[in-house]
Length: 132
Length: 112
Image 1 (cartoon, each protein chain N blue to C red):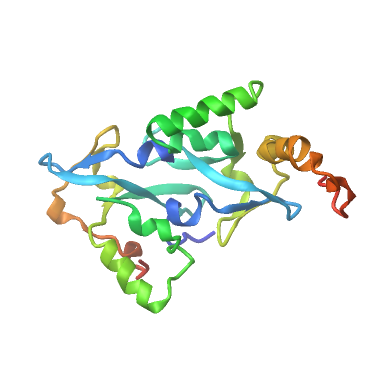
Image 2: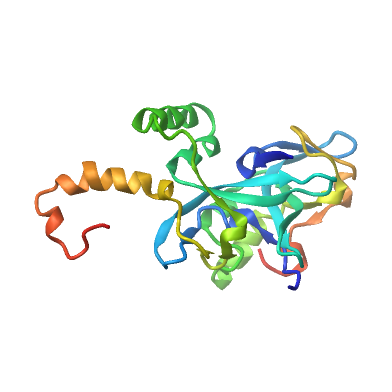
């Protein structure tokens, strides 16, 4: 495997679409986890964080605290954002393509909207796509 | 084994070896190694991230007129190699002088 050209995480990874191993959209990359491995040296990318809960720390000040609070109230059973190991990423460009299925947690916000908002609109369940 | 988030690094103030401000951390630069790991090779420091809000960069090249405008807006950005960082904590402390840092130009690959 050859070394690749360096790239900026903000340009190539953050806020980019994630496509899972089945070719289905699985949210966007909201944050990236870096790990310092034992023995020193520079940190390495260890995981991608996705779902709306990961956005909180990226929003500064009162708005960020408000967002985190709203996330805790909307889904008290899930306090952490979905985590995708970097080893499951096939490529970052032009979108982040995974070799595996997306974690269930990655689509929680969409599922909540489907069940509580979209699904209640008259005629919403008559479409060809059942939203599954 | 310690972990941190990119969102924690971005926005941290950065100082050169003499304590002069380099602005704040604007971005993190990584490179895929032969072993398949994505290793951090440096930081981009500067005054603001306004130019980054337009979505151009990486694989998405801006149209010709925007290329010059965005390059001008990013003229303050400097590339701080990881080996030149004395302490990545808050604030980030470099072991080199601000005058030793070169402008960020896609790490020598000509991109804005």
